[in-house]
Structure formats: C-alpha cells, structure tokens
Image 1 (cartoon, rainbow, N blue to C red):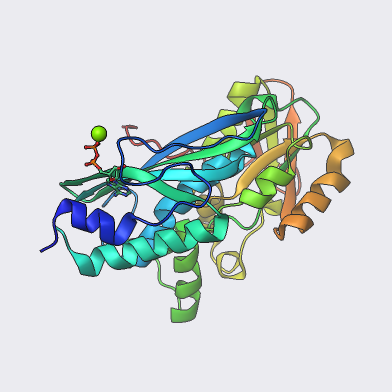
Image 2: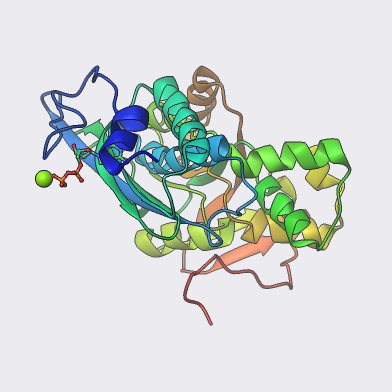
Length: 318
Ligand code: ADP
Ligand code: MG
C-alpha cells in the first residue's frame, strides 16, 4: 500500500501554472494582481452529512471543489487556487484516483490549481479552502440589498433535494428522471462566470447551499431589510414541476445543495442583469422584491401567503 507522501505525489501533485509555488513545500505561494483583494472560503464535506456513501468518488471530487467555487462565485471573485485537507480511512487507490480525477477536471475547467493540503488517516472527510481574487471594494456581499431591489436567482432550484428524497425512500422517480436530479445533487455547476459578471450590477449576492428560505434570510438579516418571494415564479425542472405542490415547495424553499446564485439588483439594472446572465450562459429569473421591514414573505400568484413554514438547514438545530 502506498504511504502518505506517495499518495500526495501520485494524485495531488501537478506543476503549477499560475501560483508561484505549489504542493511540496511548507507553504504554497500565490500571486495576486495589483489592486486585488484575496477572497478565501472553506467548506468541509463529511460522509453521511454532506454526501452519501453511494456517491461515485469522481463525483465526490467534483462536488467538493464545486461547493467551494460556488462561494467564490457568490462574491464575484476569480478563482486562483485551493488546498485540500483529506482524512481517509485507508490508502485506497481505487477511491483516491477517481476522486482526484473528478476534482482536478473541475479545477482545470475553472483555471484553479491545487497548491497544498494535508492528508491523514481518519473517518472520510474532505476540507477544501479556495483562494480567489477580486478588485478592492468590488466583492459582492450579503449586506448590500436595498428596499425596492429585485430578487433574482440563477438556474433551477430543488432538484438536489428531490434526489435526496428519492435516496431516503420518501418518493420514487422513473430511472431517467432520477438520473437527472441525481446529477443536480452530485455534479453541481458553480456559477463563477455569472458572479464575476454581476460585479457592479448586483447589490448583494449569496450562493444557495442550505435552501432558499434560510439563505435569503441571511441576506435580509445582513442587509436589514425584508423581502417577498413569488413562489410560483421559482424556476424548477419539469421533473420537479410534476411533483405534488407540497413536495415542490419543500424542494424549492428548503432544499439544500442548489449552488445557484441568489442576488439582488436595482430595477434599473434588469437589462444589465439579463446581459450578464447571457454572457455567462446561465438563465436567471426574477423571483421577488426587497421590502421594508425584516420579514420574509412567501406568496402565491394571487399574493396569498403560504401557510406552510420552512427553514434553512442548520447542523445543530434541535
Ligand atoms: P507539513 O508537514 O509541512 O505540513 P505535509 O507533510 O503535511 O507538510 O505535506 C507535504 C506537502 O504536500 C505540503 O506541500 C502539503 O501542502 C502537500 N499536501 C499534503 N496533502 C495534500 C493533499 N491532499 N493535496 C494537495 N497537497 C497536499
Ligand atoms: Mg511544514
């Protein structure tokens, strides 16, 4: 069996392209363009919590990096590099090789490089830290939403949660439909280009990881405003749209793992938002508005409030 350093050399060491120094020394060295700030974010994935043991290692590698890149996207930052801290029950090449392949393929697609990390024995756990750059003062923040702003979301919501419900056995989907929602859960596409294109246009942004209600709640709270969401406007796949309304609402409003961008922009920016979206190859949908106060209202097409209550995911909620 390969030792720690052999595993690192075999699976996680590649020549650096942009960084000044990558894997193999005590620190990596990154270059920042003049006038740029460093954007940093960490996300940990724990087996049984964030992923199921049934996930293919290649997809797990993809997802671990994708959810981290999604945080850079939400800030409008350009990805530069990442580190990988990995706990593994054993040095299993049949697991590690596809894991690294999935992760590094996504890294190549976004021009971001693995520059370091840590490898230890232990219960399966991946912790990545991503580093990006963004012009000083230009990062999109949760705190910038203003009364009167439009609320927007990218892509479609809820499919990842729908897949989770199938895995949990609470509903059944035909094979092909299950494969598409499973892809949404296991292969999220971080909206990096959109985040960068929205700099100077969006007033606030967040990526959706814990469900719309919870994540929008963070924006409202940080911005000191209220909001209204037209639930019927929420973009959803044909598969989700075919489900009973209660399932749709659960997946759209409280489903996690969407990794779409939720953002606000002034009404005068509508054309600019659409242009940014089409340049980024992502669809965006206007789903509501920012209002005075601090409440989040969920309404149907008649303006009637939903009676069902939803909340975002919280690891320690009782
Ligand atoms: P140190 O003991 O100085 O912290 P390590 O012996 O843990 O360094 O790691 C050796 C080198 O390999 C370092 O450059 C570290 O960043 C890198 N490294 C360790 N694990 C990984 C990993 N999973 N992916 C990428 N680089 C890694
Ligand atoms: Mg050291």
